Image 1 (spheres, protein in one colour):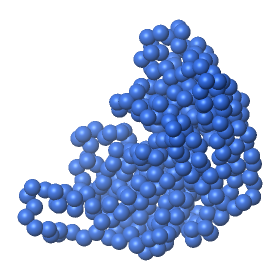
Image 2 (image 1 turned 135 degrees about the horizontal axis):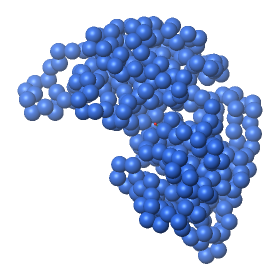
Image 3 (image 1 turned 30 degrees about the horizontal axis):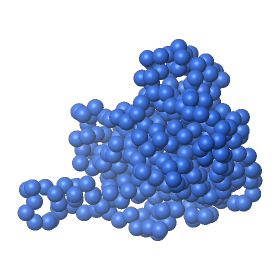
Image 4 (image 1 turned 90 degrees about the vertical axis):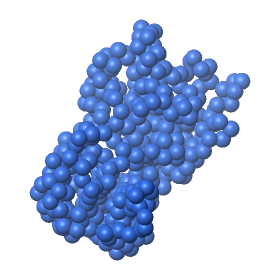
Amino acid sequence: MLRSKAFNLLKSIHLMSGQPKLAYKGIHPVIASHGHRSHRSVGYRQRYKTGAGSAGGRTLSAPQTKAMSEKELPGLLILDIGGTYGVQENIVALLKKHFCLITMKEFLENKKEMSKKIQSVFVSECRPTVDQELLESLPNLKVIGNSGVGVDHLNLKMISNFGVKVTNTPHAVADSTADIGMALMLASARRLVEGSQIAISPHTKYFAVDWLGVEVTRATLGIIGMGRIGYKVAQRARAFEMKILYHNRKQRRKEEEQAVGAHYCEKMEDLLQQSDFVMLVVNLTPENHKMIGKKELGLMKPTATLINIGRGALIDQDALVEALQNNVIRAAALDVTYPEPLPRDHPLLKLNNIIITPHIGTATVQAIQMMAEEAIANMLAVLNGQPIPSEVFPK
Ligand SMILES: O=CC(=O)O
């Protein structure tokens, strides 16, 4: 999934004078003037490397945006603005520079007219999805721009049967998601949430804990999924002098291995048996659904911690409840569950050897901005008939 030098492709994105500026390393923004106003398009010249080394680069040429008034801009359907599933205001402003935005409410109120205009749909990760009914009512739809890397909420085969492309944002999410993996590992190891509760409790008279944490430094980290995010985790883990093991189901990553001093475990079982921390960093597919179940948990050390920053359904949650209740493993730290949120009476919520965060891997000011930029670049590339930076294909 992840390649090393290409990891550095997307470096930073800034808004200058209210105009988006792509400032990724290796992606040069193309500024298109649009009559009375200067409009910065998400055109770019991007050099892709196919591996951690320098070999295999290819150059993609920039999609150009023609001068257009707001109404002439391609129609983009967004689910909503603000609220739980909505797009944030600053991202709305960014999208508006390139698209004529149509909210779901506007679409439903005036389906006949709006359906002809809509050429793209902007989808936030794991939010209510694009179904057959919607696809049938959008005859001019060309692309679904997913803001996020995981596309398990989209039926890729069905979408492709409508001749619609799907894109995602693997570069933009990598740092923030790797950070949340490290944050969960450290928080669980040092029992930060419990510690915080003691520190802020009105009943606390003096500071003393009757438990101890474990150290991350020099421990063994097993990364399941050495892709773009997994590699970023490994880079961070190096700074903690961790021994890094990894398992990829399909492909060994020799260059990344060497770059971070990681050891490849051909069998996931070996990684599970040896690791102090096991981190799941894979996309959800039909093949890896519940890949960590009773048997796998049983292989882990009783002192080990399971961290999940992929998708909730990678873990058999009933088996995890049992393992945590019976101290088969030390603890779990999950940024993702199935479903999200868990029902309030779910047994996982009653345990004290678990940390659960509400799927906040990419919930940073920077990541949200970069994801929107990457999604815009993808969608414009499709609409302009240019090479698409990050297209996702049905298996
Ligand atoms: O969950 C986050 C993503 O899919 O990018």
